[in-house]
Image 1 (cartoon, one colour):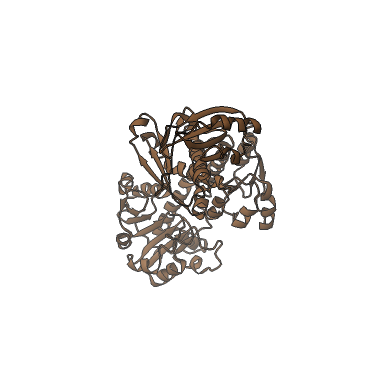
Image 2 (cartoon, one colour):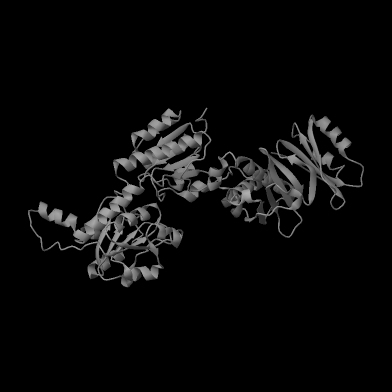
Length: 529
């Protein structure tokens, strides 16, 4: 059944009706309960497979811990600061958002705020309602020829830029992720922050709220700005230091501010809201019929895709899991998990550095999703529970394992035409090399010993190493297998290396007494893939 993985999804905020309708049409039980108290949310979340929120619900670590079956949290909007992403990741819960759903609405509100600041439209309208006719009081400015500084050049920032350029504004900006070449394509000249402050007539922020962006506009940066600079924040409360903004307004260093977001919502300290040069709204960036419909629709379709085994858009905390749902990636992820488990079985307990190498042009970008898969296999082999592609790297790091990914387009001559995944423990001879044949993950090489035929990494396996010059222990091992009731499905032997040969037996059952096998061989290991 398409929705077998997502039986029950809780919608704990008010969402567009299309969200619940799309979920139910896909066979998912959508429980719409907006306005739950914290205690009610803790009770309802216990048996839910999914949770969809807007901004009202606070998905804290306590909520995540109370969720016994939760697999995915969806935020119908861009920011996920009301979701404890770290706690979700630690528990292996996927977090999704809708990065495009409210971009246009937020950009248009920002543009409206800039226009309102330039012409003092809200203040003039309020004056008219107070039966006044103060034409001289509301002397504004033209936007043509003014400089707009845009801090954050993602989807919303670039939409603001193109719209305000139509008013004749010069747009400059800063974004550590977007390249200057990319921003130049939509008319924004990127400059260092220190150069931006003194050039701007208007500054608008469009960054997430991070430690690096908290208080981005503060006493120090306001002092570097042009006197009378106008500030817009329709992104997240806290990016602009509210105390510093109030001081700049009172001194005249800031000529006006337009705020849609606040550090505390609703704000209890009304000093900013009540300042005559401040325009404020109650967090309306995404409050359009179109944005709400898009966000509700997008998050629902992402949940349906996930339930149907497709890669959802808007993955916040696990590109690896998103890749795992791509058909061409699935065999490689299975290989990475199998090699991780095999490495832990052969060399465990694995600590310190593990080198994850991809070889071959098709795997150029595969390290981003294969490293978490290797970590998952390593931790599975070490007996960790509840580990998956979402939390694999985090839990591996906490267990003292650091995975380092490298890539080479060149493949050894003996493997010409193949793409390879290699795991190695630096400073040791431990090395595993695998590949994918068709859709089957296979082992090509073990500690320098290559196999005459690649070993399928599926089902229960018995591996053992014996001296190349010794009589073959296979008859004795087969006898032990027969006593244990295990049937031999396949046999693969390696070329001799260092006077030893590796043998890998594919079995029908895993119950083999390794102690008895080791009486006939140097080393023996058993695992189930």
